[in-house]
Length: 499
Image 1 (tube, one colour):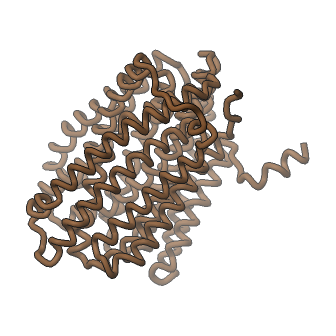
Image 2: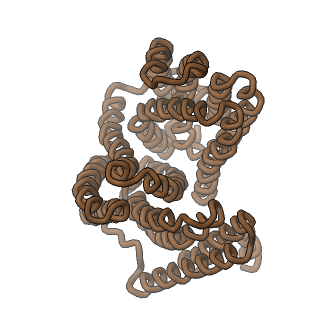
């Protein structure tokens, strides 16, 4: 039987970004609804619950990318039995882990309430919430694992559809249940979201994997998957430490207000990192499919092409994002947050430098050699600690974020020096290409900043926010058209017709 038809990478990237935006958007919409229903203290309890969900999701951080990679390789080799084996192995493993998480939260719901010393009026509701979160974690792990299968067969549009449907279910559930049921109602809405996401993703692969005889991957294949997943797990833990350490260090040496300013700025860096990571997912699958189809030369040529687009695209996104941050924050929260804009801009640039390794990491994962990725993550952790602590005492919060920037710069330089030994692929085509990209990025950033600042000056309150956002998007689109030759999809049919 033939392998699934190839899908255009541009469509997959767009769908993956929509997937991330749906997740971010549902959270933003749900926050005021939850606050109105359970109050600030109740929202704090819900935040603790979400932290538990986040840490439980780390169980997927290593094995998930392995499932995506080996599924994509099987797709490239037209091995549909191999894809089915990945699915059934994933379902068994994730169901087992989910069952353990469910049991643990049933047993620990009461002790967790006592540990956090919650207000008396919230204790009963919080205990029920923690129990319900066990079901949400179990369903969420299965949904995440199935999502890796969907990504491996390059059906990223179904990831976007499932996330959008889940986001609507969560927001609707919060609106309907939180007012009467409180925190347990919010947890029930989360369960509904995860179950719906799982159902849609299973439907998406019904003919690819579910329609074949249940079977598990061979022991040798499972061993390769485990060896692949361990360094990726280390990388994920290192990334968690790197993204959270700044807040901890600043909290130890600065006032709470400074931590708040850092938190505001860090939201933009974290959001950009999430969207960029989502865009990278299809690149991982595309390279792994090429590896599965065979041919080292084809894989290197594909990597060189994607590496250039990734690096130069990040250059424009980073400069425009950093330049737009001050008018964005002023339009969103008003004056008085210049420190948040400064700290956030530095963190955006640090995130971009860290993400610049993404295409190389995708290539290594396609080869099944993620060890360099893990060593890079550990190196950045060490450099981050070595730089941020002394700089924190010397320059406060600003020293911390510049230390983080330096750590990512050192780590990325080391990573690319090692990667060049495996595949010498330059992201630019000579000095002229580099000069054009740098000049275009600076011009786009300046335009976004000037238009955004003018909008903040002339328009009242948050009325300036859409103008600032559109200015940033327009500047980025102009940069992409000039440097990468990218055009809006609607323009392509007309261009082909003229040819």
